[in-house]
Structure formats: C-alpha cells, structure tokens
Length: 112
Image (cartoon, rainbow, N blue to C red; front, side, top):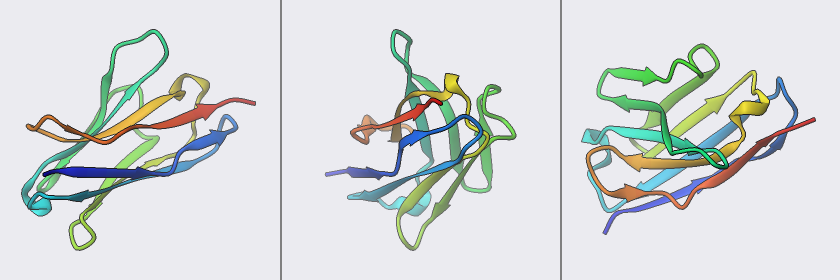
C-alpha cells in the first residue's frame, strides 16, 4: 500500500520561502517519477513540478521560483518555493506519477 506523508506549508508573506516534503512508503521510490500539484480555491488541480530520473519539469507560472528535488535514500521528494506570490496560495499535493497515489495535501497561504 502506497503512503505519502506530507509536511511543511503554512503562512508566509509575499516574497518569502517555504519547503514542502513528501515521504513515501510502499513503493520502490527511486524508480518512480514524482510530482507536486496544487489546487487553489475555485480552480482545478494543476501540475506544478515533476521529477523523474535525470529530469525535472515545471509549470510556466513557477519556473525560476520553485525547485523540485528528491532524496532516494530518504524516499522523500521536496518542493522548495521561493519568491512566493499571493497567487501561489493553494493546497499542495504530492503524487506518484502514473499511479493514483496522492498525499493528503498541505495548505500554503501567501499573504501580507
């Protein structure tokens, strides 16, 4: 059974930084692409960033500000979010790409 346990998130001022973490179990973590999605109030869930062996991809809206990374020894994927904007406010979810396996979500609020 796949489990994804998220941590991080919270309230931050515009221009600030946060790091999200997602610890996985029940899968061979090192071979699975991982992704971070977000869903803002009243909007559809969107893919923010993904990481596979040797490559990363980002939504245009976060390029240059967010960084996805992984530690295969810790079976954890991270999302470093810098230069946060009000429009980044959303619930963020980690996911095993190609599987219906999601974290429970963590709220990120960017507000002054």
